[in-house]
Image (cartoon, rainbow, N blue to C red; front, side, top):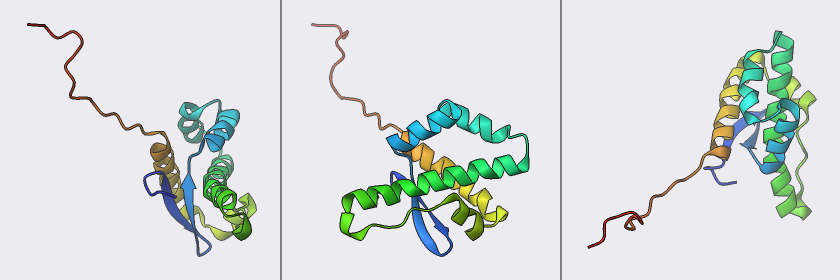
Length: 128
């Protein structure tokens, strides 16, 4: 993956690239009603267990996007998908705080837009 689109994390000694794809965006929208509701949902989680469940789900979803892209582009060298159970077993609550920052970074990278202005005269410029 291109670094400008992904954020690297390590889970259980294996490196994963968290990537926001259109597929992941659709799944997030289905669960939260849209990307804009995601941050609000994470901040307002009623209890600690629910907040952990949401973070684990997001880590798994975003980390698996790069695995799915790899598997699509390399059908002979498929990698195994990460499971929520594996994320729970291979991480500590302390690490999840760092991963939460990685989630936000990956989502920012996936939604940022490059806007370039043109050096062309304006259509409304005075003529002559």
